[in-house]
Image (cartoon, rainbow, N blue to C red; front, top):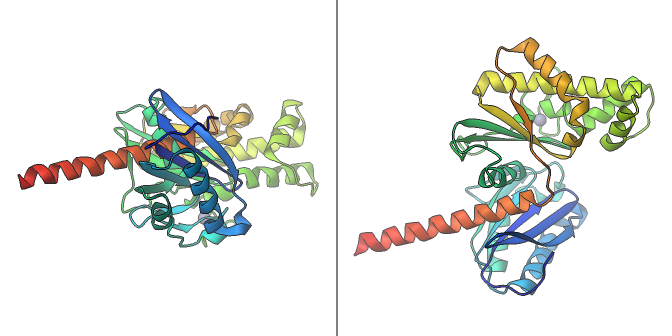
Length: 314
Ligand SMILES: [Zn+2]
């Protein structure tokens, strides 16, 4: 981390359910400036105050700010519509609030998209063809990438986690039931472990991975069930998009050796596409860096538009 004063930087902010990471772009790379505790119970205004205070201490005149946030995001309005991990943020106009405090343009997107933007910029995702990006964690995030650009449809494309995989399945906080993320995200893995281990112990995915590495039967079975559901959803996505491949990131991918093979086998039973699923290396700063790149690109687009208008009026 570097907290030496700078000026006129493009800032990126990645707001997660437990931590918020912020930093800025400078020639040669991304500089992480701070990691803040998100504390959902104290609400969005309190977190924005902490963010703006941190930025102001380092940069009095930020050039732009990009924000990635876990949840359903209305990009054109700059509003967080709903976030399962941040209950106090429903319909929160984050772009308006933050651009007023920071006095610079602010652009927002969901956490999977900003991760994808970083992966495109660093050439981890190819800049031609159609690709899908997925984040596996407490939920399942999704992004559709075509020729290096993100496809949004009418605004919200990529909500793969809420694709129905079981018509009369488990209820989901989104209001539907049988959503993919109720079967192939971290909560489901813990549930499978309890079922196969025949106990009520609450255990984290990391602990289940440790037990799987010691070949514990319940842990291996939990990962098998998890991988099977992952494969079902991936086959659905291939049928819909016929992508060149899929990139998966997120905390659960550290244990991919225990479930990706099961996902592939289920996938091969359900479709005729060639399995091309890649694990993206995890970096905790990638989301904030992608958000900063998104802010920089938006600022550049605004400048280009203004130049075009100036030229037109001459
Ligand atoms: Zn849902």
